[in-house]
Length: 282
Image (cartoon, rainbow, N blue to C red; front, side, top):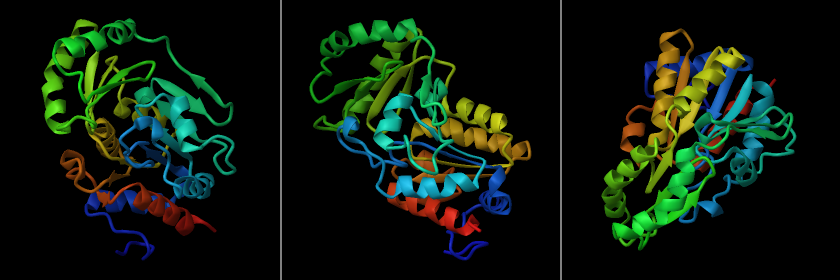
């Protein structure tokens, strides 16, 4: 432990230390962007039961008034993340933004409204044909489908061998997705079929530029967060310092290897956010 404040954990990389120092020097110019599942909420067998860690909302409510913006960047529909996070109507979160469906949807606390494009026609086709497709390839047992509105996810966490089921489905679902003009986004025991051209990196870059941020903190836990990590790397090269936080330590090695600051999970992320708020408070 130890940092410029002596109470915050020290990032493992020089770029991360520079990002944290920039945040602490001018928090009012910083964007704090956070994934939802696995970062603000623990991973659970049934994604409909996921809820923000109890320490998350108080931490965000303390931090948000001290920074330029707090944004939740998630693959979930924006409205679902708002409900499961308990973000609406919270004092201190009056300007929270949720970028759902990898940035295709946006919820602003100011208006309480969700802005979303029309669904990709390929999603409707996959929605209709996916149950029969899974049955036809013998992959129905132990898998289940989550309809996200603008994307369709196939979960394998309940299978007898979740990893084997996940790997067995990657290629067949990639074929199905390509047939309908979609792509497959892999996650932690989930494969999501969604439209191309949107990802967390695009969403984060556009939002940081919209706000005119002087620094950015991004926290994520899964493969879908790699584009956001890439985006922070590009922003750094353009002179915007950044701090990359991995929730879950080594559960997703590809992400942990890129992180400046690994944390054990959502509880630790919430504690880090709360400490950031404490350090920058008058």
